[in-house]
Image (cartoon, rainbow, N blue to C red):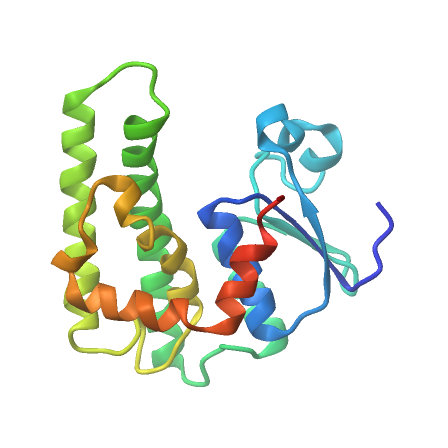
Length: 209
């Protein structure tokens, strides 16, 4: 496609896609948005595999630098470093952001994603798998709840890309048969982030209808 803005953003209506859409809105970055139709396999097309050989969204192409960047955490880090938006000034805060960003990527996303799949996509009911992933989901919500009992946001008192990364996953509690009211600090944090206009615009942008 012919790009009209410095960035092209490839996405779908999924938590990982939401992360980047929210950041782009927070930073006010002009971009062309391409909806990748996962149900028909567009993510496995040669054109998309040239951008992300793993065939997953999200991905971006930065036409200013010529770089194609995939993996949501890498994209968030790249854009924050390039623009300075939500990029911490101190080494300590940058390290805290990276810790919680990796916690989301390595824990929250995979575990909640598996629980969602066994609840909603599996052709058979696997009670053992559901119990395993639900217990782990509860543990992860508990970890986040504990952190947010002592801090307004995950990395520090300031909103960061770590919050943007975790938010689309943790807002899905109802779909996972979890009660977010059991985690009052998570509930407060979700309400705070949901109220941000850029977050609402980012969530809407990923929808195709």
